[in-house]
Structures are given as structure tokens and as C-alpha cells.
Length: 378
Image 1 (cartoon, rainbow, N blue to C red):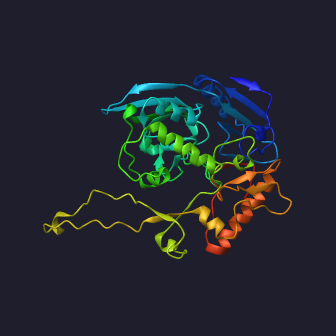
Image 2: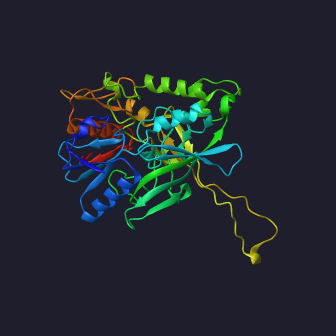
Image 3: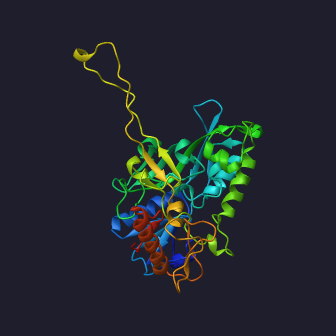
């Protein structure tokens, strides 16, 4: 591990805000990452880890603690217990899109729709990254992590991570602390081996994005190319010359609301049901069993509604900016807040609060930020 002169976080994040922290350390190997985390935890110093910097909104005042940059990399192929599949173990600091490219080039299917998502592999399970109906939880087997409570390295199955829509037990939600404080060291996925034959695309959301009308297999490379082109058109691929890409992706999460609340929204507001988990075990006392098993009743399903639609229909159009502000809504995507050049964290936070207030006033919903906020209040 190497302690380096602190670098302004504005130079290390895609939102381009943040002062230099008090201390910064680079961890190039897993052993170095474990050692520096254990040292910082023992000291009681404030800390956070930094990967690709694509999901961080840092404040204008210097962070009074240690920033640990995860610089580990590497991919290992593993046998899978399932026929026709293969395991991939990637180090936490490995670039996520580089992992997707690696899989696609070798004909390993299951993450191709997540092409172009910025950030590192270690950050992906923390918020259960996904795109176009494909999520990492569909292929995630386990993660290797360092637990802050015990200081030990443990292998944790995906089923114990509490994966949900853009969340897990490891995620630091705005206004709360993670259910489990730990840092991911490596991630293991289980992917289908399709080779050059391609794959039939089943998910309706992905089929719409790709414009597919038949069930013919399509090459993984073709899927990746189309997804990258779609993300680029929305300003979701970072380009130093394009201010529309100088953001943190989707700044607000799509709202998850009860079905009763969704019914109060205009019918044209896009929405998708969130499938509830049904208990498949029915226990009936013997003294009340008469030969009939009642049909299980599904509880009312929560509904995911489009935050981008809510923003635009609250009067916030693409390209919107507050007077004299250097922060603005992307001209390509209403859900992305961008740094138009030299914007402070205060300016971006002001725009975010204004959007929250407009959506709340119009629809009664409070949009929650998706990036991790450091020394910033909304």
C-alpha cells in the first residue's frame, strides 16, 4: 500500500466535485487492501473506499479522514457446478465494463446488458447494479469481503447480501448506515457459455431496448454494441468533452411505492410491478385439515415508478438549470444531474433539492438520491 499526496476528489469522480481529503492511500493488492482497512479501523479514523468514482457525490469541504483507493485487478476463470456454465472471479478494483467485455469476447452470457455501467466490480453487488432488466443478482454466486466488525476475511453467498432493487445490506443509503459494514474484496459470477452461437434474448425490457421482434439467437457482441450505443445516446458513457456525461448516472432512484399510491399517479406514468416473495410452504394444523389446501394469496405488490417521468412532468425539462448555476439536468436524460463546468457540490445539491421539492409538490413523492453522499446534505 502507498500513502500518496491527497488528490482533489473532483479529479477522481465523474460528478467532478470534492476537495482533497486529509489522507489518501492506494491499495494495489488484496493483501494491501486488507492491511490498510484493518489499520484505519483500529485507529478510529473516518474513512471510505473509492473505486471508479462514478457513484460518489463529495462535498466542497475537505473530508477529515482517510480515502482508500481500491486499485486491485484481475479475472480468474473457475469451474461451475452447473453444466454449460463457467465461474468468473474478479478483483474488487477491476473495471466493471472491462469484466463485461472479457465475458462477451469469450461467449460467456449473463451480464452483457450491463455493458457501459461505470465503476468497479466491487461496487456492483453493493447496489445490485442492473440495466435493461438484467441485474447482477441473477449471476452472482458469492463475494469475498472484509468484515469491519470482526476484521476477518469471509466468503459470503449472494443469498446473504439482501439484494433488492439497487440495494443490499452493504449499501450506505442516504440518511442511514449499512446493515452490514464490510468492504468487498472479490466477486464471483456464474455465467452461461454460449460461444459464437449467441443467445435468445428473453427479457421484455431488453428486447425492447434492442428492437428485437423474433426469438432468433443474437451474438453477445451485438447486444453489447447496441447497449453501448444506447447508453452513449443518453449521455451515460463518460466523455471528457461532453458535460452531459459529467454526472453520477441516474441521480435519483426510481420510486418504489405501494400499489395504492401508484394508483393515485397519472395513468401515463410508467410503472413496473415489484414481484413479492411468496412463501411456498403452507402449514395447516392437522385438526383443521379437511383435504383441501387453500390457494396462497399474494400480498399487494409494490410498484416501481419512473423517476425520470416524475421529474419531467413536475416541470423540470432536460437541460434545466437554476439561475447563475453551473449545475444542470442533462440535455439527454432527465434523471442525470450534471456538472456543466466548475460547479460546486453546493450548486448540485441546490438543484437536487429543487427537483425533490417540485416532484413532492406535484406528486407527493420524495425522490431519494442514488449516489453515495460524503459531506453533502440534501
